[in-house]
Image 1: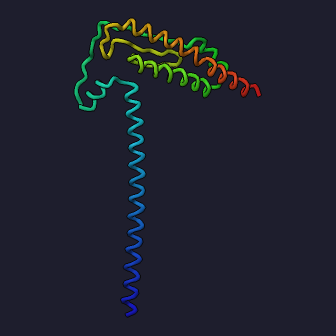
Image 2: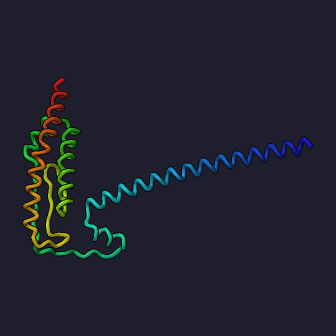
Image 3: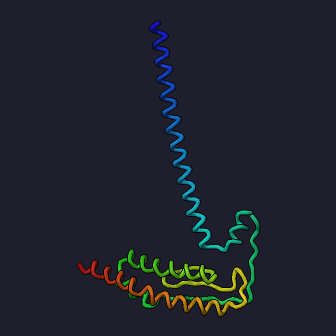
Length: 173
């Protein structure tokens, strides 16, 4: 009888241990699946910020992507004035913060006006109207975009100046 009881205790212990391991593995699997989903969303966002949607669709379908020619486009280059001076006077993290504020606003306006952002390199923002989707009044849209950027810079100026002044005060202390 005591051997039966010992056997029952051992079986119960093993079953409980197995259930704990199973629960732990399920919890870890769920956590890893959430992390994978988060990473996939970040990758999607990055891909969408770099390529037109029809190119992404073709890539997913493993289609060959043929070069396209667009006859009627307007290319826009925007340069952040006095960028070199800004870099000399601010720590790199604050320079990046200033550019992020500016470029997020530029991206918002480009989405609003259907302007395609090609890229940003340091102080230069490059965009195009008329590609990858043809636009008949591409020059008008580009001009409206430029005016909207100028206006938004005027609105952002107090915030940017405050950030720059705070950074300079912090550095001098």
